[in-house]
Length: 343
Picture 1: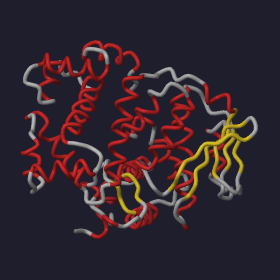
Picture 2: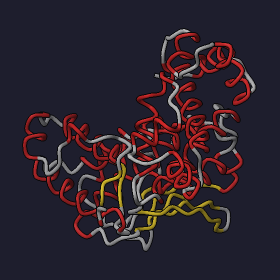
Picture 3: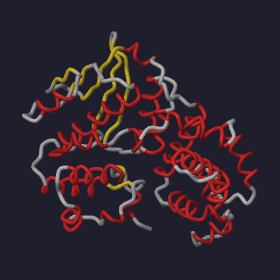
């Protein structure tokens, strides 16, 4: 057993790390130079991995060795739009109101990182979204705060379809490069505050979201819950089964086959999954449901081909299952989603 899996060391999503190096490339650095001297194997890093803080610290220091550009953190924040955040992004985009979207972000922020926590409160006529540090960030405090606050503004603008006109309060001191930041942000920015906050009129919490989708919201929220269970699974069983399921989905894999792949009996796998708050059947259904939405919205595959990719021998069985999940047929769902799809 690997002891590192049982520590409470904070983590950060591998997706953030991959986007960090995308930002470095956007600033003119070569992929070869970054890969050659990286403290971890970037070519094998998966977006759904969670890296411990100690490794993140090494990577951030490594990144800063390659560029003196003070806008790196802000460039990273701009790259991380909502659709790059997996099911949490879909949950936010499909929420009914801004308030509901923020509540979901707070509830499932742990699926992205445990370095920070989000909270929402009301103060007079203002709604306040506050970003709290969970660990001392030391030399990297400014970097993370600039990146995450930029990210939050970008996501807010993506949800509302308008520039953010509220107030941005940062705990860090003003720096020369913040002049360029002010030029692209219409928010009023102040520095040397006690907290990192985004403030806007509280009535804004009631604003409806144009892309609200109750079915997609339910599915995305279920996937976020599954991810939260995975993060509580120190032994790594859930991600291992999930990765295997995704690969084997076209073959309609059985519990017995999954157990054999994990080097345990079917009875043991069933018990351990129950202990983690799930079941093999539930994982299979969630995987199929998530992949179905992904393929219908983001691929040109026929409905019959998608049914086969999900392990359904009879496409009509897929149609019945999808209607049970969403209340619509696969073709109806695809047609409804395509007009709102953005590139």
